[in-house]
Image (cartoon, rainbow, N blue to C red):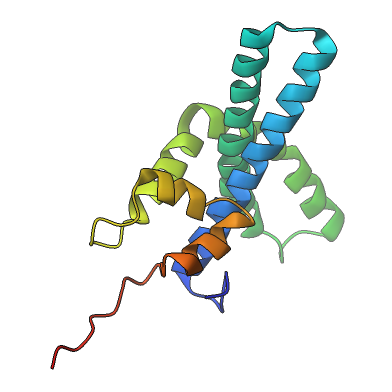
Length: 154
């Protein structure tokens, strides 16, 4: 199964979940670099990296939610105003994602990956939502967001 086939909502949510996880990984790497440059001890490096991953992951969902609101006015506004509104929506979107929307959205997406047969579990769901490893792993375990087809018994 290739990721994001057509305009199916399930594929699109997997695509967005993988993008959010990608921003979480970017947050981890940025947190590691910043904490190494700042000379944090090991515990500080771990906690700062986890905090940066949380900001990256949840901030993506908040920015995405605000961009959807701004996108409604795309045809009514001049291009420069639309681009300016999109840029101005980034900081409030990150704040919205951190405090309200982002963690809830990612958690619901993790829960939604369950196809009714008890598979995939939480760890497998996290693997499916990783940017490059996810599609490969989903193919390996034969996961599809539409559920497994019942095989005919003869």
